[in-house]
Length: 107
Image 1 (cartoon, rainbow, N blue to C red):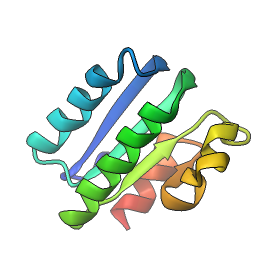
Image 2: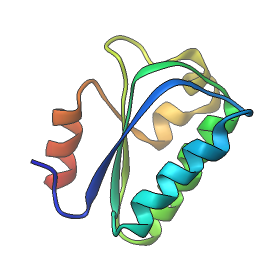
Image 3: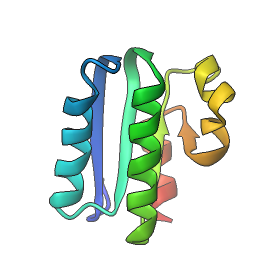
């Protein structure tokens, strides 16, 4: 069950400079609908570049401003190297499943 102020945003394909505006719109819509916590499911993402990471960090700052958090669900295994390179793995909560992210946000 999704906590009342939590929205799951499933993302597929690639998040790059050319399509990051659509990704930003999805995140904005979740906040506009009253979400304080976001679970961004990246398990079906094949590639994410620095513009996508910037969007995630901006969303995280926005969530924290309202007392919420952003949780990223990644495919099993290590986070993409760009996450480690940019320090995203230290700035955002990373999870192996939606269930684990939702459970943590509900606590």
